[in-house]
Length: 329
Image (tube, rainbow, N blue to C red; front, side, top):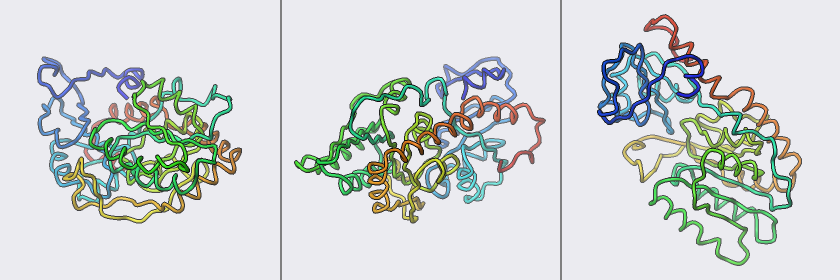
């Protein structure tokens, strides 16, 4: 987003929380606070307009987010779902939507490999309970056996404790009749992620909730047929015309790595039986699944680039400051 804003002629200077990196003797019209909101209390008030970029993955932002939001003059969020989570907590600050995006020079569907290979499913996301790898592996194990020409590749990033939990789930796939699963060890750079996606047929993530869901959008841009949950931020860019959406029910959120940030909140529990059905459908109807992926790539490239996000952000930044302007849009 910062690079795209610079490309739109906005003077952007980035700095970390470390006071030694903060700009000195500079005048700013706006400051944009990103990252986990409970750390915003340590940020200096560098500009008269202080924008907090807030995303959350459950139904109502936690109390600590609501408290630190009071240090800002307005909020940005990535999606219409983000607006709902903020408003549900009683926050009355102006809220604008500035979505995420993709770089179409990197994430595109051109040059997808055509070599003979198994029908390939891929999942990318942090190794935490929110991503629901447990549900994914259960459904994949129910949908296929070793006789099916399929593979599931998982790129789980960060959180060593979560990775050990994922390894525990994979123990069941040591049986001789289990379908093929590959847990990728190295996290590639952006180009490597795009190559991985283009070498896959289906991106599948039965997530409990997303503040944006960037890997889902990147997979769409690379021509993958997408299977994900019909809840939270991805519903802004995944619809029945370009993906397969899982029905769900709301349940108590539980994430041991960020426990206090999800305490007392709810998120989605997608239907595992429907996920089994969708996995099988893509395998048995590969041309139709590829057609969904092609539609997804067109939508992502036409509607959801970082340049488009930066244009929206620029419009908000250069508009005449009005505390009542731009709420919930």
